[in-house]
Amino acid sequence: MISALFSNILVLCGLAVIAAILLYITSQKFKMEKSPIEEAIYNALPHANCGACGKAGCQDFASACYKADQEEFETLKCPVGGSNVMAKIADIKGMKAGTMQKTCAVLRCNGTCKNAPDKMEYTGLKSCRAAHTVMSGRSGCPNGCLRFGDCVKVCQFGALSLNKETGIPIIDYTKCTSCGKCVQRCPRGLFEIRPIEEGKQVYVACRNQQKGAVARKNCTAACIACGKCAKINPLIIVENNLAYIPTTVSAVADGEKLAAECPVKAIQYRQNMQENKHEN
Image (cartoon, rainbow, N blue to C red):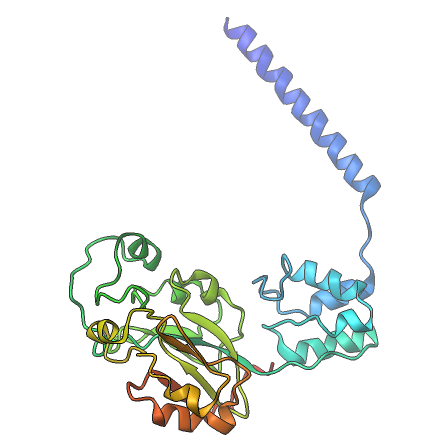
């Protein structure tokens, strides 16, 4: 019985070795040598393999750049490497790179410990994704930040940290590469990649779609869909009890006024962001 068992094991091991040899021979016979140009493009990339470019990784992006004609190449962007990396790749290809606007992630929530104090105690797993499946939120806001920092854990560039005083994440725009990992990770869709226009950004830091009075009971900084912002700029969308500022709205022209006129301070206006080290 034991000898039969060993015989079967030896046969299987032998077959495995033969299969491995055949696979190796086949891979060597049919392998495609990479072009030196494609290899140079790959070496110019930051090797973050974040997928923010829409490709499977840096190797896939390098292949796409190598195969692209001028028109296609201008549409390819590496958010992590920014314009500097795309300029290097353009030099390698002998083509012109497309323009890239500076961007940075924003947190569309201002549900701090002060604005949205806890109404219940959560004793489950300290994870936003876990908490999102079992509760509306410690403050009662069904759309607000859960304050457990899942986004911080997935940021490869140290651009996110939890503020101990406010309880919500803060974004260091000098480190943010707009890779989109925080956007993908947040179970409540609170992050958005938005353009930086002359060092300025403007956005509604709220996702609560409850009616104004109810939303305000859960968070004093909740949008009440009053429509004042839409009167300043008609491009602003007010629906489902919530305002949204499209990226086509100029932060330079209207940002400061929009933030000043918002009665609940749900609109955030960021300025002096010219020193962003990540040149997109």
